[in-house]
Image (cartoon, rainbow, N blue to C red; front, side, top):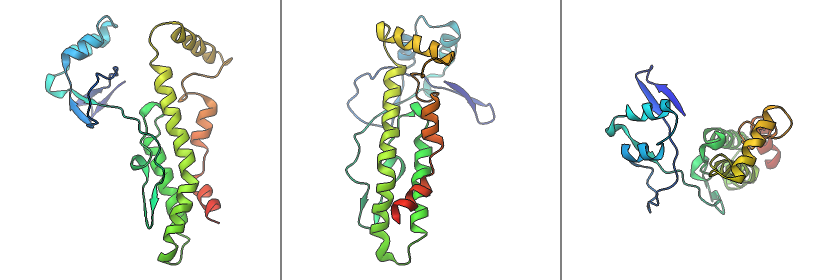
Length: 200
């Protein structure tokens, strides 16, 4: 993935590679141009040319961590939302979207309360209205990571055939992001209405 930034002054290039076995969960670490060149050796010349033009000081690695679901998002009058309670892998582009759904649900419920004594119950309703859905979306990102990064072999060839059939409309896409059913689930959900129904 590559796209311009800062009014086309910068060009961001996103390259993925298997985990190198680092033990920490640091958000970012300094990347290595040599590793990039090694990881993409033999690829299309356009890719290797882009890598060749990257400045050594501009390489950052972000580890894509997936954490198990939390038991609860709420304690008393405090609630978590967004990546604090359901960090998303980028494979279905739902990190910010799910945080917005959380905020909408939380805002809808809290706008109906009349005293601070209702806050703990309101937060429990927020969690009840959001937790299962957010965890399902989180899981779809995990599934996409596996499907999109299969090593060469029989499973990868079967996946590629499914892509070909999906483009003809005769199969679901193995990429959840472009699958029509998944898009409906992601885009047609009304988090505020669901939250209010849960609260009532």
